[in-house]
Every structure is written in C-alpha cells, then in structure tokens.
Image (cartoon, rainbow, N blue to C red; front, side, top):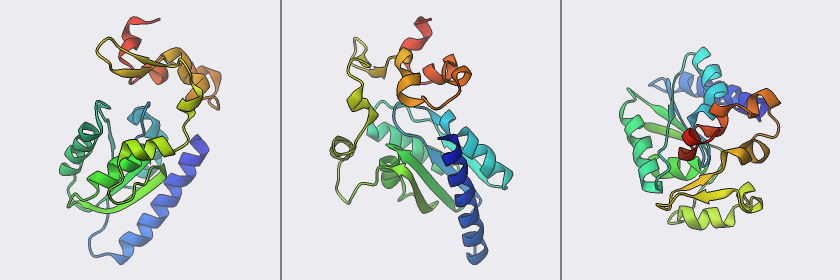
Amino acid sequence: MTKLKTFLAIAAALILVSWTAASADPIKNIVLVHGAWVDASGWKPVYEILTKQGFHVTMVQEPETSFADDVTATKRILDLQDGPTILVGHSYGGSIITEAGVHPNVVGLVYVAANAPDVGEDEGELGAKTPSVLAKTEGAIKKTPDNFTYLDPADFPKLFAPDLPRRRNSSRALRCSRRPACSTRP
C-alpha cells in the first residue's frame, strides 16, 4: 500500500508540475482527505513526497461524526489555503471531496481509489454498493453506549494493515489513532 501511495504521489506531483507550468496561477496547495476508519496520518508518506516537491500540503482530520461534519472540516481547511488548491480524497474521502470541491479555492479533484458519487447520489447509497473489507468483519464493528461506531483496535492490523511490517502494524498509534475506546484499552 505504501508503494502505491508513493507512486501515486509522485505521479500527482508530476501532473501538477506540468499543469502549473501551463496555468496563470501556480498551484502550490494540496489538501489530502482520508477515508473512513483511519485518520490523516495514513497520508504521511504522500505528504512527505509532495512537500519535498515544494507543495504546501495539508491533511484534513475528519471528525467522522457525520458526513456533513466531515465536509465541514474539509471546507475549514480549504478556507485556510492561500490560492489554487488540488483536493485529493481516498475511499470515503472521495465523497467528501465531491461535496467540498465547490469551494472557490479548489481547481481540481483527485480520486485515489475513492468513492466518486454521481450527481444526487447519497454517500450511504454509494457505500452500500461498494465492496468493503468491513463486510468480512463480523463482530469487529462495535458501538459505544451512545451509538458511536468504532472498529475494535485489536482487529485493525489484520483488516487494514496486513502488509505492514509487524513492528508497524502493532503500533498503538496506528491502531488507535481514531478510536475513542483505545485510551482505556491495553
């Protein structure tokens, strides 16, 4: 997965460099939007590559409390950009960038293995049609007493990071970065 993200980041940087050369206003801002069940730290390798290329890169940390809240969080980040911005989404982040992409700073959308809803298509409907590793995770999805959905941290490595070296996929930070129950679990 990391090799794929690295390749995509380099390809995106090359495309942006050629696009920048042809446009009146150079594109220097890139905003990265993660998918569900993970956090912005998943974009770290891409962030590092793009910043070395001279881009100003921001990773949105969505609250994942609702689709509307996630779009709002993305728009807040877009408000902070000082010029033309490319908005990049992965997985569920594709639906978010579709909605937030009407922001005046956005000059392009990049979908990286992302949901790409049609006009009027609801994220929930799209998600129901899209194959998901979660369909194979009976019992891994939990709910807090107030009905907040989360993934059991013990299940994270085998579901989402089987290709990472053991020392990384067992990392507490990687497994627990977005799950509220992690602070009370070993």
